Length: 110
Image (cartoon, rainbow, N blue to C red; front, side, top):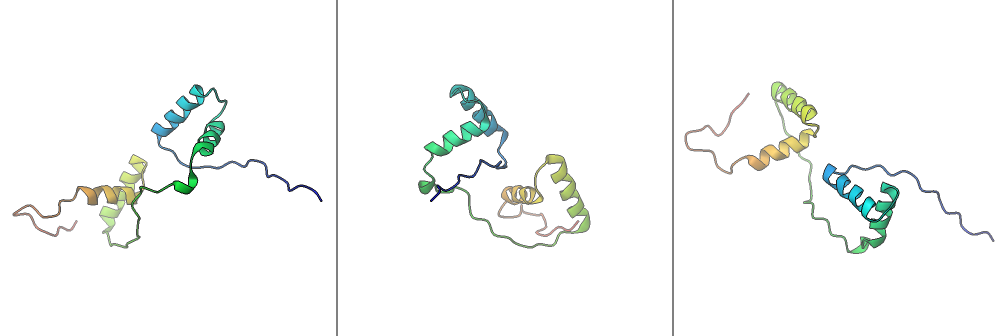
């Protein structure tokens, strides 16, 4: 009977904020490691995957109608800022006050 074969490490691609990449590089130097892969493997070896609790709020998809001009402006801004359209909409909703200022119309169309 032969022993089970261990798969070779395959590349795993994911996004990190620039601040975390800087921390990864600092940890690489601090632990005298040769690569980002070694830092990630070390971090995972010390991390309790079973105890992890996500702090991200659950998301739910919704569908809304946005006029062509505003949709174009939104797409262009997302491209310029290198963010998703959804991120811009979330930011706009977070800044929207709960009540309209007195004297301002509740609905505006562009």
